[in-house]
Length: 155
Image 1 (cartoon, helix red, strand yellow):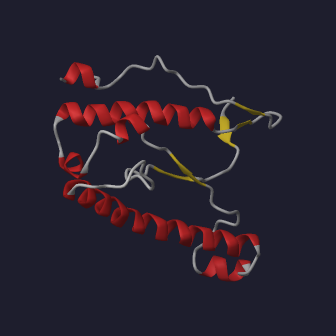
Image 2: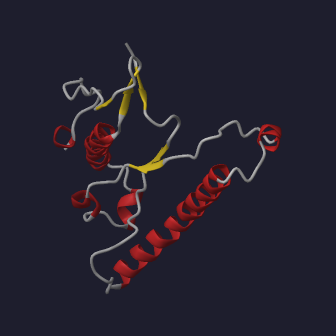
């Protein structure tokens, strides 16, 4: 028996730049980092606003099926946008320069956090059973083998 997600076709994204900060930047380096974060978020925000506009059109049935078919838009249900967020602990240790780092231990630390946050994200999603349609939590296998060394092993 296979499982399907309760909402078909959500678009999941991993934002890597914080949209809020705990304190105002004071040093030139902190100000530069924050300006870079805000500039990086503009594109994401514009895309999210466009998705919300499309969702509004779909919910209000403002565009006919004929027009949607003609432009190749086959989806008729609003798009659910969900976020997998980096842990606040890791986020607080990163700055602009860390975005450029290709150091294996740094990359593995990011991957480890992504796996942890991704599992928590997946566990939070509702799942429909093919038989009967009852929602239940997804089955995850935290004991699945790692395909690369952890951050501590890579150091």
